[in-house]
Length: 211
Image (cartoon, rainbow, N blue to C red; front, side):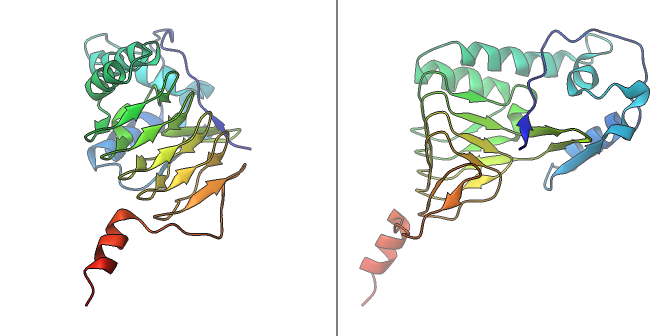
């Protein structure tokens, strides 16, 4: 099973060269991070297979934006109120629409919050987690995560580098790493779509306007 990275903000500062990984990550982010990026173990110099080492090491001024984003995520993590979470997550770079609700304990990726989007009316349940990077033994994968309009990430559920469609639900304690279509409920580990599809508000409106 895939495991979400849990790098510490307190990574040690070293003078070791970052290898190919740093250049790949920098170019990918500059290009808009449209597709998933895969960093393999051999891309890291001196066997430093760590994103914390990659992102937080080096001159303090150069790493200030990354440290600020992670600081804002930490602030959001430990406040119980949705409005305060919205305030801090937005400053971390998360794209948040109107009327988005965060339950207590809801968390967003510490290292790449700028790759996360929550559209209007999205909801994160109690202890829900959205991650934009995942570790496996030989690689690190980084990608965007999106909760579309009216989507719900259930309590203790994990959304990993994928999207939830409009008015769709990721059930409690489920794990999703593949897109969930509009008006769909998905549950389980990994999350599996349920047969019954619910019409979204947009589909209902289009149907009502038909002659």
